[in-house]
Image 1 (cartoon, rainbow, N blue to C red):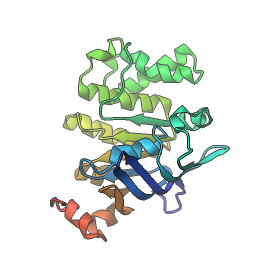
Image 2 (image 1 turned 90 degrees about the horizontal axis):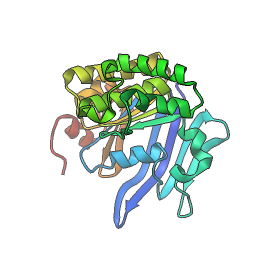
Image 3 (image 1 turned 135 degrees about the vertical axis):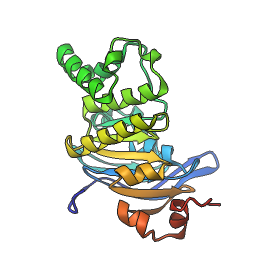
Image 4 (image 1 turned 180 degrees about the horizontal axis):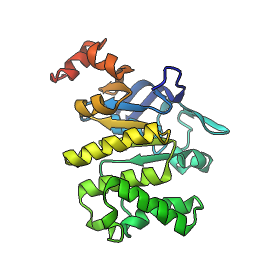
Length: 261
């Protein structure tokens, strides 16, 4: 990651409540362009909620999220009581089309594996033939091309996770959000996924935000790491600094495998 990288996403003062429970508190987070930012944290820390807000699938209650230079004329979402959910606001559709979110249990359309990949391309105006060619190339890269004409419901959990990555490879969005991407993968699938993430960053210029509890995965792929604990970003730093010189004692204890209470 270049030392002169601009921040593609900047979140400031983001808060989110579900009923009386405050899930995210005063979140400040920067995501440099053409980088992989890993958000580490335990179960219940608010990682998936933060990912959904950054990916414009869910509204925050307070704060701002800025997207620098992705779509002309759409730069900052300011959240307050009157803010409409960006997922339901057509104003943000061009921005959402530059993003892809892949969750631990990805949504699979009731159609063939190939159609699950071509669908997004054809929505964007690509011809059927070109969409199939690009989709088949993506399925080859993730190692499930032989499944292309089978019904997507026949995929295992690990294969469904690979299908999500194939969609990203085919669509080539500027922003890729991944929620526990290797949770259902075996070691081979995990290595394949991590290699593809690095390829998408280095060769396709994509920016990724990855949510995980896996410290070792963060060490392998992250350019920078943010530690989310009890709804707050405790520490954000370049990967090597984060793991070798953590500034906060809670970060040090988490990296050392200690229980945080």
